[in-house]
Length: 327
Image 1 (cartoon, rainbow, N blue to C red):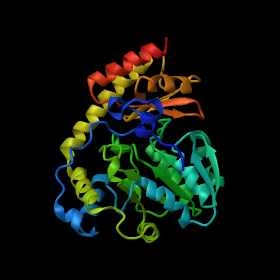
Image 2 (cartoon, helix red, strand yellow):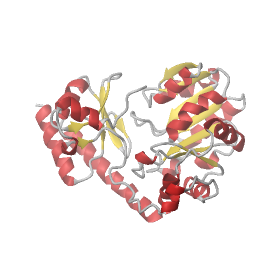
Image 3 (cartoon, helix red, strand yellow):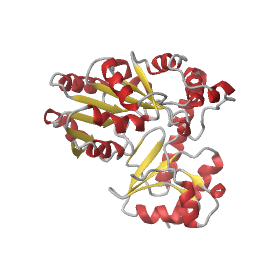
């Protein structure tokens, strides 16, 4: 299994610091989560039902003609490669490593390519996999250019797969509204924007035939009843969503300023995190961890990803720690 952020308990054991003392910035999850109300008992007692209104709520929120609830976008990432014969697959790199891992494990020939190379060399690929915006590099793509790319790929039976896990802060850039045609697959996550990573909930937007194949591959009851109940309400809470987008913009601007003030100019980022390539990444990661601040370390390329602090005191704590370790 690949490494991911959020391994706080492991870090606590390794450094001998109690979990409650840590500032965990190792994930790209919104630190101000949607406030989950009490879950009704029936959500725990009954098997989940497909006609509970969740699909319709997701279609409205994502502006998508067809959606399939899944156990986080990770479930779709693992299952999609099983729906195609062995193919030549181009995956954005550096990017979320589970994509390339899943296609390789299913026997496909995978090339890890930069954004420019993927767009320039799509003619020799059967599947193009993009993360938009990219994690961790923050790459963004012109929406109309992606739609033209999809047209060219679809004309020869190829796929465009777009992971939009970090799209909620800029929903107008999404391809979900155009996902009803063949050959375009868009994945969305509830964990990042709504801060509900523990719900393990996400959606796939695509043509009905592909969604049916994916549904058969994943089997029934992909989402637990309590998760379905909470997510349906979160998707309908437009006031919270608008406020969350504004607060994300403010926090990421503040994080960017702190990093730059301490000699770590971000290489890229999104509304949810900032990414810094630096030859000292492993050393800085360890030094911050010894101060009970956990960030995400990448070895190739050497870099750190900083998630968003929640409180002003958290920003100050990070600022002071960076000032110490950068001296």
